[in-house]
Image 1 (cartoon, one colour):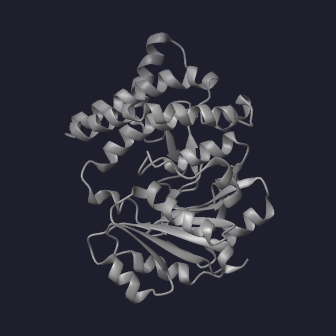
Image 2: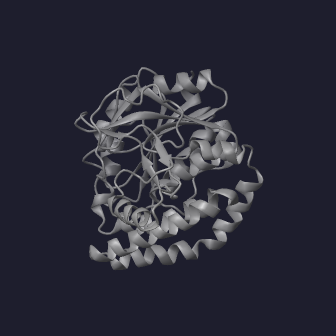
Length: 340
């Protein structure tokens, strides 16, 4: 594939200590792309470092932080203007195996209805999985498949996945032109699951390619801002559910989701994070007009059956939802029945 037909977009914020390894790994790929770094208003020496050390990289400097969603959209628009057919997204605190991109490209080249293909993303020590794609549950909660498990071939043959991690995935431009770019209301967290929801509903497939390997410093960016994860989680989970879950499914997913959401809120309060949790709830309400407009378009253009979507969901809680599992167990004991 010609270089200008393939691009990798890296959103970056205050990553001078990690982006060098990231860019080195992308410049060493067996399939060479255009590399685009979107500099999200960093206050460290990131811009100078990239400009001096990596002159071949396209550097798009922004005056402020547009988040993951806004940042990658800027890079995607640049890549599309340059004629890209496929666009990969990659975290600034990740490192790619030398054949990472080549192996992702092979999937999209071979399957016309695959709109997104994601990687085997491992921790930086290469000992445990970070993600082999994301699930979405009947509780309205997404989670990365395999996170925290020892690296193995457990998921290597299970290549159909509900959602792709934005940290190391390849997107078909034809699909992006149909369903739109990332929703900037998310800023960060779950915007990749939202993209996959829209892709699935529009009839595109999402795949996992285990031979495409990358390694990620988990939480390296979000850990720099206190309360950031709590705020984004409380804001974005309702946006994700309200926009995408079709009405017949919402009747069963919705009650479980709101129970889980209330549990998350009080858990945040218990951890001393009332304010970021409260702000997240308020902002999820603030975005209601945006959600309703987007939902109408998404559901109107749905190309797959409710049964297809039901078949892609996980009928259980995420593995790390220990508090909710305990509450559910008490409910089962009280009612004498089991209902996931």
